[in-house]
Length: 161
Image (tube, rainbow, N blue to C red; front, side):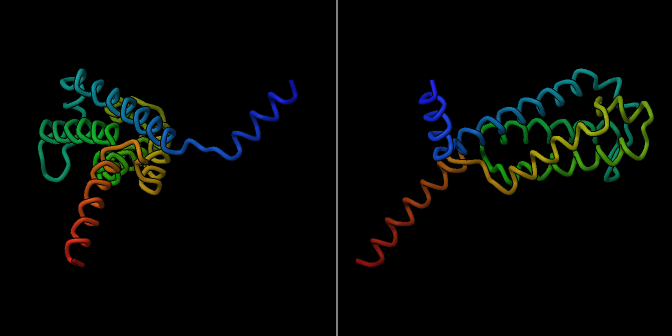
């Protein structure tokens, strides 16, 4: 029995599954963000009248742009494609959402984002981690990077010949 715990703890100290952990975190965050996006698409008609447009756009155009960005970024995050770039837009959105919720807890704002104060902070923390740590080896970014690195080595061999 003690050898089981000894092997379990000694083995787990030396071995980490950081790439698998990053994949799980990307999939979890992407699914959660997709769920938020789908909820906004389903309640689009109810949300638009209470939503104020931004960047000089109408509320409908702003909401459409917001949902499209959320959808695109969620898919890119799950696939690990342009992950660090795809994390920036949702990070800014969650900073904006947390600011709105904390500054004006009226029903219109809460209806739009449909979550409690502090919920965007979870996304903010995860997005900052993804921005710093990157997507990991189980991602399209890694596959594309490995392909370009492989081709760069071939070009260096050709140039040196």
